[in-house]
Length: 574
Image (cartoon, rainbow, N blue to C red; front, side, top):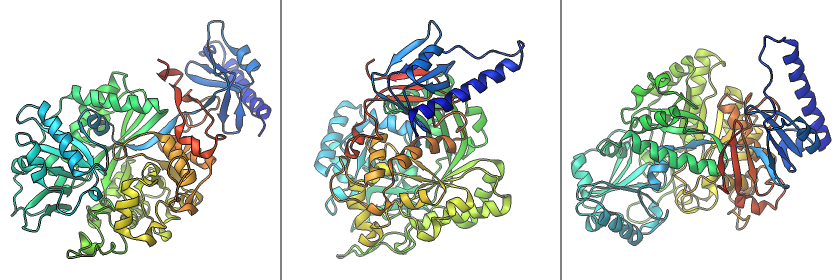
């Protein structure tokens, strides 16, 4: 649609709003004056594009030509000269872990995919700075980077003999600890793995220090409590970084007791600028966080709303093989040809006779359920649990959300539209990173890799589809990586062999997933997600137009400024 038509439509909307205000009489509040205008640029709107945009009291009141918008501005209005740059709606990341992302940035770090020698050197350096007995926490290791038998507690013992060490893996589903941590946790060669957990052992039956799923949560419980102030600092570090990438709304996908004080306090203070939804962890690996569900209104404050619970149905389809698959994992080959837990089908974390009633109960209360479901077997369980809730309560309940969906069976693709739930995909992960091109490929084999993250199928099914980074599972929360790889399914730069090229989607579809659809899932499409009169001025200024630049350049997009409700919350120049 031509820009002139867009401008005309916007003027009609603005005139109607002013007419309504005038008809209500002098007793009613009058519209705020236009106090902020953006001119001389390209403004991406649902109907096309315009040159300029006007804001009054944090709300968009018009889009149109430069002349039209400048004529609306109050005498003291702030004027932003875009100088030909692009303005678009702010982005939504529907799966992050803010506290853990910030904590990781402040902890013992090494490159994702680092080998044993590099990890040992990093831990040794961290131990040199730590006091005796002080915990060393860091990450993130990749199982495929180790030679057989190399990932063992003795490696960490040698470089940090006086400190407990806990290193998270790339997925945040497994940890690698040293002997001091195993002793503190009371884990010995005779310790049985908890239900829903795995304790890796060497050929002599000794724990190697690698603990998976529920077994890893036991370690979290013995880590010294982090103060609310330190929690707040970590959350600020993470949310500030998200603002720098243009993220105006997000879902914290695993709110736990060890972070709630800092998260709530930061929101209450007004420091949290984004619109945030928090999903409180429920289930066997909640770490005692389930009690927060009944307290959710007390902890909700500012722009933070805790109206969601998180359920982990399975693990991840990497070397630990804990994601639930409908068909068994590939044989490993060699002397130890086991296919992992669950007879080669993965690790079920919640039994159906517990899962279905719980989902139905939350649905009846209007609480959204966000499922972790990586394998197609776990996706099937989530679909069936939602179906049970719909049968019991009808279709008027919340839009539940199935997260990750690394693999989805074709029979389940139409279910999102039929049962009114949302698919959440993880395109930050799927371009050839070690987790995809090495770990997942080795675990599931080449045939199933052809069904990896079926984005086009679920988009075209008519269901709502949103995007989540799962940061810090991925090294960067940069959403422009996701935007480009949704379109190309290739390494950023549009190079190399695509992964499942038949599941490419258009730029327009990718834009909707990252903006409009996220706002809709958070229940705020009437207030955000697009740039239209009557919505908040949640917008970002870019150094390029991602809808027109060569596709291989989208990932390099830079955010010059981020505004939320008309407030500048990030500026690259400042």
